Structure formats: structure tokens, C-alpha cells
Length: 153
Image: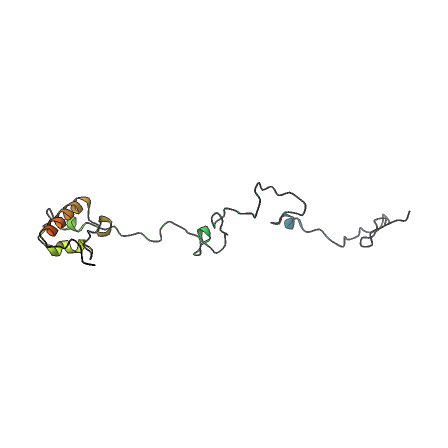
């Protein structure tokens, strides 16, 4: 039989006293062996099929790049709020009002919307006690036609 050798790689039957030959195709350095793509022919250790997703800083399904949480633009969110809202103080408590008169329309008017609805506490900042007194005064003023129930559409 004839000796079949690879024409690209020389045979290793060289004399023992000669220097070792350099491989014409050197292997990659060990750091490159741990690349993100799995080597050809090996099974992936993931239990699901499809693309790889990581729950990184971009949130589930988002890339960890310039996008924010959930893949939305704006960068990563550092805290829940960007600003702290100033606490609203009850106007009647600061003036030490012990009775809200239903006949003084100019006091009641800022607490009513244009359509005639009473503004809630979270909008005006009144305390619970004075909000109750305010609603009673507004309803009494409506009954004697000092304030409108609603505007015409």
C-alpha cells in the first residue's frame, strides 16, 4: 500500500534531534476558548429552545445596552422617583379655622372645579377633618344657589 499523508501537514517522522515544528494553524489562546458561542457539535446546556436571554440590567427580554428597564429608552433607572413632591399643608389648619362658613363663596370657590365637582384631598392638600367640613359647606351653598351644581355643557 502507498503511504497516504496529508499534503497540508507534513509528516511527524522528522529526526529526533531537529527542533519541533510550528503548527501552521495555531490553536486560539485559552481566553478565546470561552467565547459566547458554543463550540460546534457540542450540546447546549439550556433546557429551553430558542435564543438565549439573560435577565440582566435591561430586564427580562431587554438588552442590557443603552435601553432602560424592559428595553425602553432612557437608561437604567436608579431610583423609583426622580424628585420628591412637597407635602401639601391644609389651608384651614394653618389659618386655625374652626368653622367653614358656607355663605363665603370666595373661600369655597378654589375647592370646586369648573364643572362644579368638589376637588379631592390629594389635589387640594386639606386634612380629612377640614375636607369633611368643606364638603358640607359646599353642599349647603349649592342648595341655596350660591354655588352651581354643575355647569351647562
